[in-house]
Image (cartoon, rainbow, N blue to C red; front, side, top):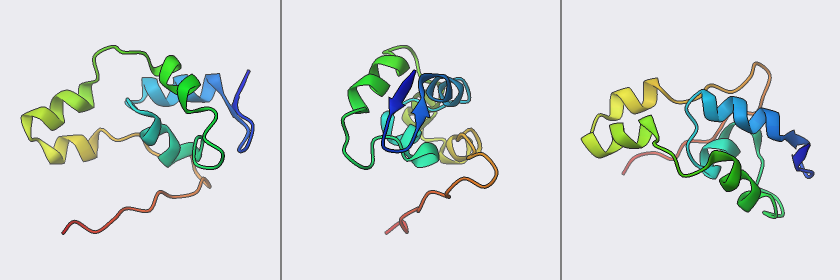
Length: 88
């Protein structure tokens, strides 16, 4: 089933990225663009991600930034690369 019709993202893709460590709709958006155009799919993505424990969130709370970056889901080859803001 398509979750994001703007970018053709399916529920299977969202679940695969979630299994790889994505915990939030923003993290899904960084690898698929889902939710970045009209935004109507964001609640569906939230529902697919659920409210379970997020290993990356636990690392953030511990202050282990290096482990968080190392555990970030990687975009598929040829996919648009996320734009990272410079840390101030």
